[in-house]
Length: 329
Image (cartoon, rainbow, N blue to C red):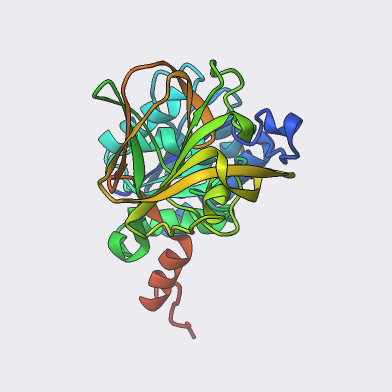
């Protein structure tokens, strides 16, 4: 039986960067419509069951209102507290239930917490956040069809998906958290509003990729040395005077000059020791960990989640003739 799990973050696309920068708002009503279209796409390619993570806005229930489908659809039965960790719990529950694919609506931060629990289950990630590098803007119908093609195994996973890199954060020798795109050490003593937009407070940046055309900390890396998502390398930047200065779009509508003291390419599997002191560690653009000293190490790992390329999934299905039927007389 093919099962697809849907995780839609009601908080994505709504953080403080709408006040301090010019970030657009991705409303929850639009997420409801996107999930409805995704469900129709899943149904069209023969998925038998879809389950949706419950959330504070009721995206799942609203998306089902009046929708008629052949497949079974409902809400995931799970304890929920309407917090960030719900996405991790949902991903673990979907993995335990044997889901063939997860459809994730959110930004880099949402995909990060999903990646903590999804294990080997591949992700189709639809961007509804702010500074997004991991997910992409996708039409809901097509995203649903791609997730369904993977979940039903009619297209081979390794033909249409890439195992992404991740940054593993070790505090005093123990694995504490991870990031999919970027990690930043900030002088800010408190997590506060979480979103990181003030480059003057940044001490170090570590990247899994640096993609030309991106925004945020990844854009900072592209000014030094572009890193592709399939390249077995990362990048470490020391921020501060004494080197070069880069002009980058650090947040929507904010182009800032950032001093880069030094840079170094990291090899896959390499571990980097950072002197953090009293400050915070931001993961995928959001401050998550407050530190008061101690040993902080960051490892560039190959053990990130499987990320499905929607164009590759559709192309693979086309090559197999899955969208064609013989004409009837």
